[in-house]
Length: 370
Image (cartoon, rainbow, N blue to C red; front, side, top):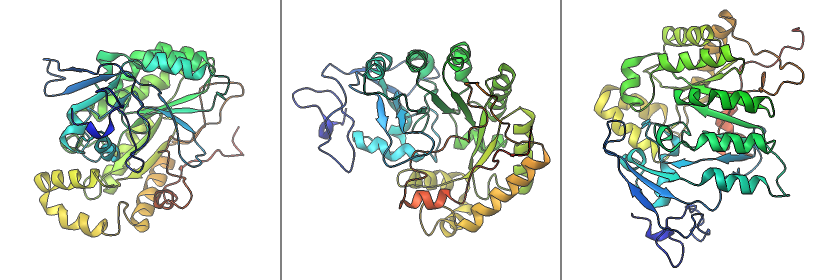
């Protein structure tokens, strides 16, 4: 393990530390880290670092209108999305943002136990908690480690509302728990589906369920009564952004019964940017100059491009009747609540916030609707 700069003093355990604050106390307990590999097709080539976390509730910096707290039971992600903005966070553990992020997965094996203690504190105010804002909590490793059932039960049992954003159809495994939780607290669910193009999907998100399977999951959640929003994300310039592709994707999302759709254009932060360009050079080399021109000013596509995509998706969503219903009085399922966003999207003074302002939630509640 190459975590020597972030070890808890006096032992050999890994500690999460901020790159901007290398003196931050370690968050992993003083017990031996277990390193595992599994000789099964789904996990071949991956290494799992089983750690005991000291804390799992993370306060979101700044002010967010959507949520103030997050939980990330894993670090690194077997979904291997080449564009993932969270890649750079793996360097805080002295891993790299490329292959290590895909294959070296940190697992907080005691997440539910620690969470129960944190939620039991008198100071806990039962603020909304978001999951899936960094790496996917329903990535393939969750099928083996089963951390989410305990987390869902702990949140619901404490009266804490929560949201989940995922690409993982494994969320359906926990459907009975989610239905039970929604009877006690507001629960918001969202699936990320950027396009229907399977040729692109196979190389850009190689560890994820197919778009068709994710649409089936949206349909199952809609039929259950819980409902599910869709983040049409990311939309890849020159690959999944043609009018025909956008229309087909919105039509499929509407047909699956999604509560709402929100388009998010690809953004390329440090770590993800380098890995994405390497993939682009190997897979679609002719597009590299066009990408460098489009993203020459930073991590975000220019506002004119984002506005064009948002307007197109808005038009198609209206055409297919995809509008957000109002929340029935007294329900706890989060109906009518806007799509889940990354925690820094509204941070004042942050370039991320300015970029996000060009991609608002598409559908506000119509005051004239019954």
